[in-house]
Amino acid sequence: MTLSEIKTILKQSKTISFALPNGNLVPNHFHVTEVGKVTKDFIDCGGVRRSEVKANFQLWEADDYDHRLHPEKLVSIIELAEKVLELGDQVIEVEYQGDTIGKYDLAHDGSQFLLVAQKTACLAQDQCVVPDDKPMFNLSDLTANSCTPGGGCC
Image 1 (tube, one colour):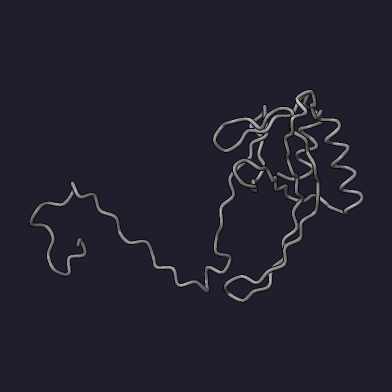
Image 2 (tube, one colour):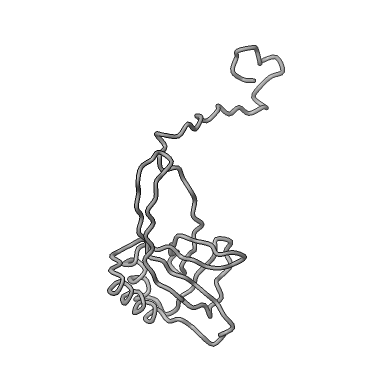
């Protein structure tokens, strides 16, 4: 989700809620303690230099149970960050501390924001020596005498 997408959703919302990948909700007294710009410069495993820029939201909860962040307040924080940090319409990454600090992608299901688990990937697929997938067989499809040397089933 990009900054323009979240602002559009927030401007049509009366409340804000975030669901974790396991379905639990971030407690509704959370704070957005940071809206930032994160730039990552790196070399992939194929030796190619890469750069990535994201908007970063940090969600935090404390014992301030009477606190509620309203959509219009979050929009104003985002717009200030866009101006001061020269963000542009970046993709949002969310940090939230459960057992450890997790980084999540952000989605919306029509009623709440979803913290979506991120996955890693090799960016230099053409440089990696990853074996092709092996053919899969159902053991129930094989008869006791169907495997022969060089037959490809063993």
